Every structure is written in C-alpha cells, then in structure tokens.
Length: 263
Image (cartoon, rainbow, N blue to C red; front, top):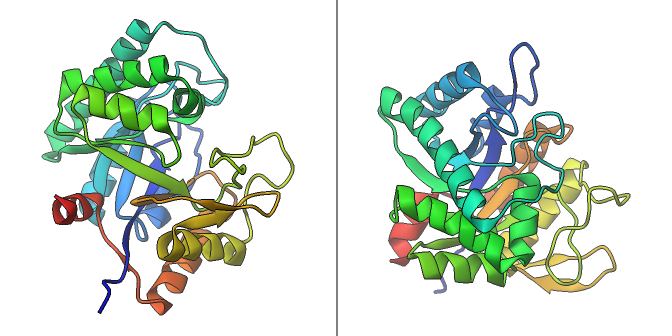
C-alpha cells in the first residue's frame, strides 16, 4: 500500500509593530506546525518577537526565522538593491536577534525562510540566493532553508552552503505557469476564498501540482505549505485546508518530523 502524503503547514507570524496589530497569530498557531517569525526589520519589534516566540512555544509550534529587507514602511515587499555580501550579513544579523529570544525561552530556531521581496528576488537570482544561504550557514548548517519549490536558485544555493533545502508552496497565492508566484499587483493573485484555497492545498499535498492563472497545470513538489497571516480570513482558510486534508487522510506534521523521516 502506498504511503499517504504528509505535509508541514507554516505561516508568517510576529508581523505586528508597537500598537499596530497585523494578523491573528493566536488563531494561526492552532492550525500550523511551523512559524516564520519576523525579525524586526521588515516587521515585528523586540516586544512582538518575545511574545511570539512564547506563543509558539506554548502552542508547540516550531519556530523559524523570517529575515527580510529593512523596510518597515513597505513591509519588506518592495524590491531593494543589496550586494550578496550585504545580504549575507543582513540575514545573519536577523538570525542573531531572533536567537536571543529563542534562547531565553528555551526553544530552537528550526528553519529559515526569507520574506517578501527578498524571497521572490532570490528565487530567480542565484547570487542573492547564495548570499542568503551563506548567512544561514554562518549561523548554523543544521538549519534548513525554506524556499520556493520551483526555484533552482534556492536549491543550488542551499546545496552549495551545505544546507538542507525545503521546497515550499503557497495556499493563498496564484501561480504563474513557470511555478513562480503571480505578482500581488495582478487581480486574483491572492486567494481569499477558503474553499478555493483549501482545494489548492489539497492538490498541492496530494498531487504535487497547482493550476496557474492561465489554466496550466504546474508541477510543484513541496514539503511545506504557507498560509500568509495577513491574508484576509487567514484563520478560516487554514481551518478549511486542515479539514480538506483530514478528509483525504493526509497528515499535517512539523517540518522536523518530515525531514527526519526523509533522512
């Protein structure tokens, strides 16, 4: 009998700042197995980071770092220009910040996933991807790098740096025919209907594919599926996806368990 697929659910958390709140982290941790925590440059601050690490520990959710561009006003979703060496330092700097809170709470950083424009640019820019991977490797080669499933740049950069690469897919984003994400500026690029997003999650987990905006079936082999915490109705989308996978007999497990089983 063939083994049923297993997948990790992740979400970007800790993206509030000061008195400004973004997303419902308390609701999201009830349905995810891994969290990507903002490290204070594109979102988050020292108080938010401290509270979010504590929240993840209490919920039993794995903590990962989500380094991004130093762009609070643009939420890290605006392209910026940095040399690969600067990207390496930028990533290492943010890992150090999150590590302090993780150490204080007695938890580990279990993965790294770049945020926003840094993620999307690196997915198609080998030099940028190598800068990210080197920054992670300088911190620890035991921590896997999460990146776009279709990205050769991410996969090769991780391998060159001695890191394990975790291919990722998205529950709430529309795909291009080449496996990249459709620009957020394009109408329909964000999936906000819970059942539509849940159907995409099921297809990704069960079939290893998604339907692009032009109807093309795109092969996407992913170990982790992301639910953006700032997507309208994110907790409802997450619950719908959980229900759809449970009905199909597909388990949702922490990334560490998936990687250990595949080792």
